[in-house]
Each structure stands twice: as structure tokens, then as C-alpha cells.
Length: 279
Image 1 (cartoon, rainbow, N blue to C red):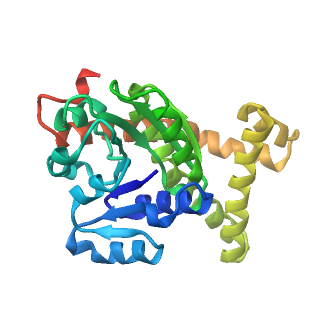
Image 2 (image 1 turned 135 degrees about the horizontal axis):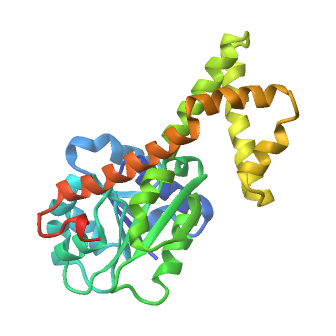
């Protein structure tokens, strides 16, 4: 299988690195394109052993699976460039924020096989969480192909497309929320006397351990939280402060706001005839 990336930024490189490290795809079977102004990105791809080009159509001609790893505002232009070279044998995987499958299908030849994906940045360290939705023209086996590719950089799951924007608000944007939590915990550690570097490591490992407990024990987070809190202990005093500040409500608001932003971004990026509001 030959893989192409239109757009050679961090996410494209993370996916390419995951594919190579997994042994499923060799570097010489991957090609990436980027505008000449972003030559430094192609230099980074070359350092990984990837083939590179400035021509998006060349990526299509030399690939079986094409990842659209571009910003939403560039989707229409890229689609017009690759449409003449695209056939029903190609599988197009879009990671463009907010752009629906129908949006993309409307810009490509009839019956194009389109998949919409929302990955997240921990894919860079092969600890990502990706959700994907399949287009109507996809064939049997396409979902398994996409899952195999995405699982090289972490967890991957198929969902109905109507869930992709909420996934964007939760796991797509979630790393930034958790970085803020780590920073806040570390600042708290510094306030009470810990060295900065130690506080950061303890905060990061605390979130890592908590996440592993949720995933590996299958116990609800509320129960795990209660298990930490002994009567009149330090944890329940700390939780009282978090509850007073409305931590859970703020996180829920953040997910909702990011979800709505994802929908609005897709609306603004493409013609009025193909808006997310129809979903």
C-alpha cells in the first residue's frame, strides 16, 4: 500500500512516523506534498526517508490512500487540484477541521471514497485518540484499512459522522485542556514549595497514571475519585476547592465551545450550499 499526505505538518509527520515505526508501511512508500513556502516541512519529511513533492496531483498519482492534512480554508483549492487525477481506487482521508464528508464529496468526482478523521496531537508520541467516519461510497474493508493506519499512532475508533464535531471538542481539543491542568497542578506544587521541574513531572505522571487506571480497570472515574478520598483526608479538602470552582462544569463548557467552533469552521470554509447545519 502506498500512502500520500497532502500537507506535511505535524499531524502528517506524526502519522507517517507511526506507520514507519509500526513496520506496516516503509518510508519509500510514503509521499508528502507542501507549498514551496513550506519547504522546511518537506525537508523534515525527507529526513524521515519520505518522498516529497510540491505537486498535489503527484501525490494522488503515486498513492492508494491520500490524507488531506490541510487547513479547512485550503480544502476547496486542494480538491480542485487533485480531482482530475482521482479515481474510485483511491481512498481519501480528511483530517481538515469541521469539513463534512458531503462537503468533500461535492468537490471530488462522483462516488469518491471519502473518510473523515479527527486525530489529536498526542499522536506525535503514539498515544493519540482518533475517531473516523466513513463516506457512503466507501467499500467493504475501507474502515479496517483506516483503523489499521490510525492505530499505529494510538487508539482509533469508527463513529457516525454526526459525532466527529463532538469528538473534536473532547479528544481533538482535549490535550490543550489537560496541558492547562498539568500546568495548574505544577504551579500549585511550586506554590507549596516544590521545585518547578519536579512539580511538572509529578503532575504529568499523575494524569498519565489516572488515565491508565480508568482504561485498565474499567472502573468509573467517580468511583476511582471516591476511592482516593479518605474521611477528613487531604484529597477531599482539595476536591472541595475544585467543586467550589466548578471544574467539571468548566470542562463541559470547554468541550461544548470547541464542538461549536468545529461546526462553525466547516461552515465558513466552504460554499453556503454545503453547510454543517444540515446535519
